[in-house]
Image (cartoon, rainbow, N blue to C red; front, side):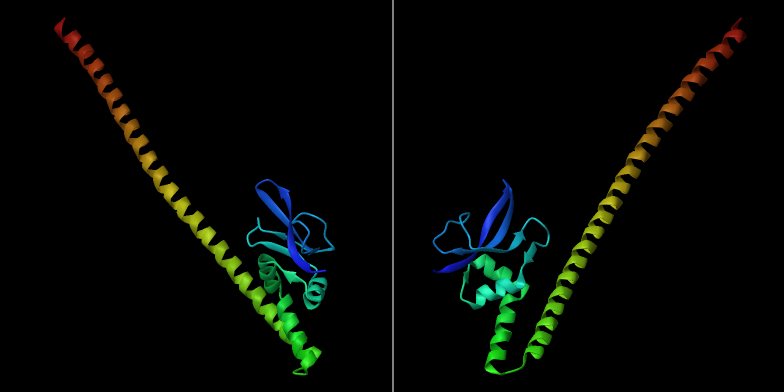
Length: 176
């Protein structure tokens, strides 16, 4: 039986959520599967992958062929890195402890890279919000200035009208 590691779609319309499964190559995408080894949610930023690392490594080592997307996910999670390191242990290039140390160093570097990207995205969002707030403040100041000018013009017009009303009243007693 040729086995594949593939994605099985779930979720609602427009909001895909996938299970990472081991299935017969002849089975349909959302059909029967042998084992579920994880989940993949592309809707989050960055995409969330929850993977049973040991089972994924086992299936890759016994020859299950992943689809292109799943291969990328497994590489990002380090399954192929560990397979490579285990091959080195089998050949006698280094021992199991050295392989685990190399894998941990690789994983730590990967996590630092993800953290740096998250921080950069958060920083850019804050800068964008600050720029938008500054632009909104300028617009609000311009609007407030226009309103103040209109009120001043209205007050001047009222004062002028009151002055005109008071001027004829003063002139009237002088004529009589």
